[in-house]
Length: 247
View 1 (cartoon, rainbow, N blue to C red):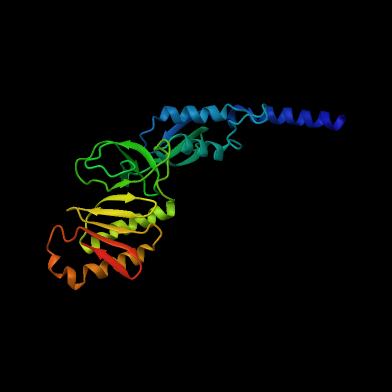
View 2 (cartoon, rainbow, N blue to C red):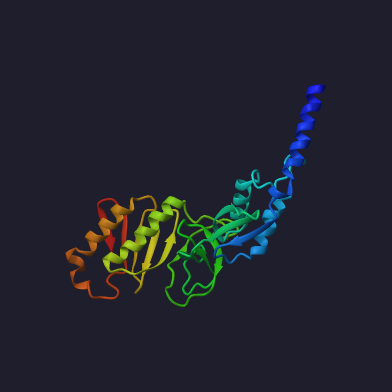
């Protein structure tokens, strides 16, 4: 009984110690470029700090505040935010440093539609994070593919695979092709270029092999007289081993 009483007494004293004003987080400020209203981030952080450990211990202590919990909550609660870091200033102000996701491309639905206007931004990791305004030109490459449920917060492709795909798409400019639309399908992917041409390839094929095969086809005799054309081919189908179909 004595040991239990001592433990309870120590817990109470520790609880009071955590509440000493000089060690309390007094204010929260948000720094960094973000479209998320700072007040929402502050409110979220305050709601976490106001929750006590075991209903007894304050979480506002500058030495023991739940850093990881706040960071995870900020990133998971606001799709526009890519990263968050916390720092405590000398005046016990908790500073939340945030950085927004940067638009890399747009997702415009499950199927390709001419002049698609209902699009969403995608970041470089393949995450759909916000509704995009209508772009009349080719400011961003448009991706199409099935997304289950609410688009915002969804992952268009596995992060690593999307990164590889994005680099491959941009590398096609080295072949004097200008990618505009990418259609992701379960059996085949298609890339559409300015002028209406397109290539078709298997979703799981190595992008290095696809690029080299396409480069070989475009440098072949069959394309010798098409080099200056704005529409050098209708399609090139690269889905079959050792055989390439084109028109």
